[in-house]
Image (spheres, rainbow over the protein chains, first blue to last red):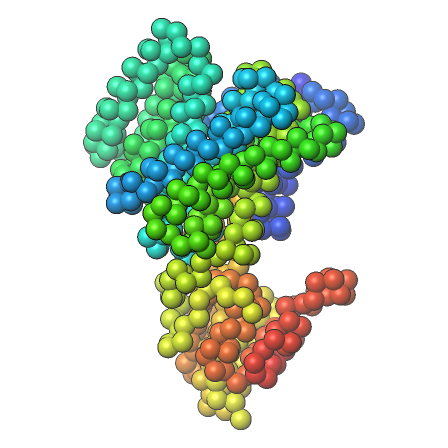
Length: 405
Length: 140
């Protein structure tokens, strides 16, 4: 479609449909947007033409890319530095194993079992290595584990896993030229300066209607992202690290995070997730369902084989260990970001991309269901659930928030 | 006849009728009355913690308003009411609270799903009637 505003209306309309479906079906907007993007491309592509939706047009690519970068920044900024410092040994070990085992396992499965090229296999390893901190957090919050040491350690480990994923994504496919060295040096300088500069700069000039904070953060993300892409790396790498480094300062500014959230979820991420979904080929999935099975199984088996012993080494019982392991086996945002990186850089084919995204979505859903159905460590749940202010507590025999009748 | 009344209150029209009838009964019988509101699931498979936190804030705000509304309605009748909010599956949480709180009457609203929905899924009201440990009054 040539009329830019009509096309924008179509995309925002799709985002609105996805949001309504998310409300009705009680799933996340992101998941709904991916599915809506896939269905829209299938239907519109068949009826009107494959390019009508304009998923590869420059402005859609820009908005979607910005969505991925800001989303990654927000993900990093949610780290709780105090918890990480308190449980750094456990978080580092479990998180690194949770990244390394599926990275190698899924890459090997893609290479030896599916016959993918080495580059496509490494990309599969990266996409399958992730842990969805958001999926884990939702479960922790719902069940009250987020206030326990068990839940906090698990969440901190998720950040380490995702850090491994973004570093792998940023460096494995980099050409390692002089530009790479410049990129690394620029990143180190920025990472060193920002935690010192940002809070002072915001204290002096922030808190105004002109939204200086959002502009400053976008400047940092775009500038470091630009250097990353110039060096043949990926813009989400510096975005995630900047988010983590600013988690203790900017991340605690709830008003700023809420403003960024409005910008991100209101405009940017719908373009990112709908675009990611629009590249999924349903015919390719239907033609080779075993590829999905291999990728998904490779992730699950290698996560369990690696993470379970690592978790047990920190003196968790069998049930807590299995629950911990299954939670660490979830994936969504960084999995799709990695897969889309592979597609847009020609590392994977559209068919391979489709299978990777399907396996990523499968890993968001299946481990959570199994963990909550069979391995939930009920004995670790806090005795009372949080009540919103204004509600009165129940006396004496307070039931747990979730107990199966 | 009834000394402890529990009203399942989710802010729907049926639940509002249940609240009114529960308060009237409590006033007439001199019984203690509580409401139970159940926060159902946060969005599953979210893209970021921010999305989950935003949803949680929305849910908390909604249930704060529900609790206040119940207290205001009860205050108009001169009845003291306890407002409870729990997370979990709607039916099982209501039943558990009724059991653990030793309530002897549970008042719930009849939602009025379509016949097909009721046949396929079973309504919340039907499940509450089937599983409740005490007498149940369905308000319309």
